[in-house]
Image (cartoon, rainbow, N blue to C red; front, side, top):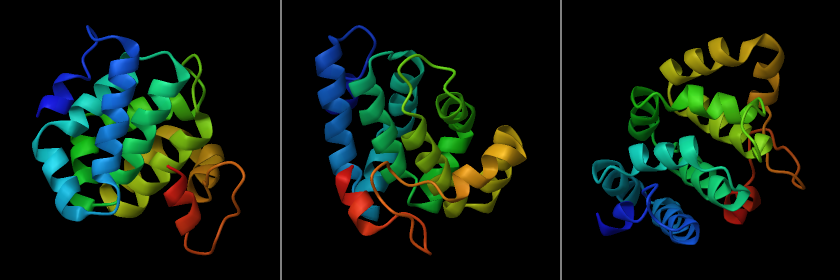
Length: 157
């Protein structure tokens, strides 16, 4: 997993950002690729980046990657098992400098939709007030659809 090796804290910021976007591109729309990314340690690497990165572009890349990885029930569980939901909640609540709250809400939405166990934990951690925002989360500049985020939203990530 050479790409994942480029996502470490010791790397230059731009290298981490580009490696994370590459992982995002690999995770987009293919369950096979999502599984490969998961098995290579991509979930933990992406969550790690999200924990320590404080620049907006790198955090956006990590959040977008988690959105795509969370399309699969198996990978959503991997995010939960890696303690990723509390990390995403911190971003959604704006408890991290330069947080992309809207994208974090969409990542939480994807996790909640992918697996009931994730849904329960997300609801518990965000509370009733924020739960409604999670359920209707879309990226800025897009309209909500009855089924959640539109295909246009997905393509923007």
